[in-house]
Image (cartoon, one colour):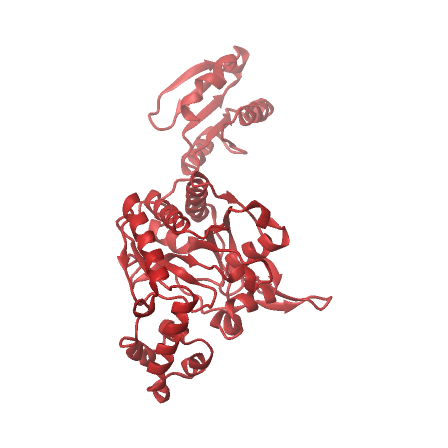
Amino acid sequence: MSALKSVKGTYDLLPKDKAVHRHVSETARSVAERFGFNEAVTPIFELSEVFSRTLGETSDVVTKEMFSFETKGGDKITLRPEGTAGICRSFISNGLQQEVPVKHFYYGPMFRYERPQKGRQRQFHQVGIELIGVETPQADVEVIAAGYQFLKELGFADDVTLELNSLGDRESRAAYREKLVAYFSQFEDQLSEDSKNRLKTNPLRILDSKDEGDKVLVKDAPVLGECLNEASQAFYTAVKEGLDLLGVPYVENPRLVRGLDYYCHTAFEFTTTTLGAQGTVLAGGRYDDLIKMMGGPQMPGVGWASGVERLALMMGEGSVDLPRPIVVIPVSGDQQVEAMKLAHQLRCEGYIIDQGYSGNMKKRLNRANKANACAAILMGEDELARGCVTVRDLESGEQSEVSLDDLVTSLAKFK
């Protein structure tokens, strides 16, 4: 019988790797909380319409990448490919329009059926924030500043570039759409099949095409900035002034767009070259029409999401240490019961305690060193008779006899 394997595109997060992931997610949560965002958890699967309606029936995610299935009851269900739609569905389902502004942080697994590669799997993890109910540029500035602070606290301030653009309001985008259609129609026979379809349904998506032939044509396409009306220009200026005020560095990228109809005004990405070719590690924007598109009230929103796997790759394997235990070692089997009692007592006092389960003291100390233990408590018959144990500092090698009554206090330096 052959050994069972993991599913293609999935992987096991063993303790050393999980420590890095946890550091990324806990840093995001800590920063989010300081900016007033509290954690919300939505289901990992939703009715398929939550994503097909919001991401667009013709989008690559919906047509090629979603894990969808039908339940025994006939419901069409999809494992979530991203976090924003679920947060917005939750906003509607729970009637949160009476509580705006709503500020949510999320962390969890997402699922996309795509070719697995380094830093990109079929099950991956994202952290993100969503600010719903504020239509002024101050919300955009706060959301971007939170993203920058998160990356800064991970140590990436010098490794990322914030790229910024404006998608304008509905009027500005309609004018831009006309320009794009006019431009690409001249070269329709040179476009990829996907982009020929996008020309009729959503020409902005051509600008994100991965096809090399399309990329050549995109270089000379009109830019959105040429079509911004006065109100959109004022909004964009206010966002840039806010970022300047907070000391968040950025570069303007007039080619940065979002192909989905509900995005408007601010679009931004933090990119890096530390993973090889330029890649995005955190991206977001304003989506004032999304909640209405989902059947809720007209409600502005802005947010971002970041891939934990990519950030963990940037940090590097082994960049975060596992917790260092104190190991309780009975000198012989006669002290095993006392060792179990002491280990339990110390765990209840908040100490990280491991136990040597078998073998002589030398073998147990070797295992303690492999576990990167910071200290060992040696329990011998003579010491226990005097109400004491020996505490050995595994860094310095120093050891001393400590009364059991004073042990909790004397171990404080190892906590």
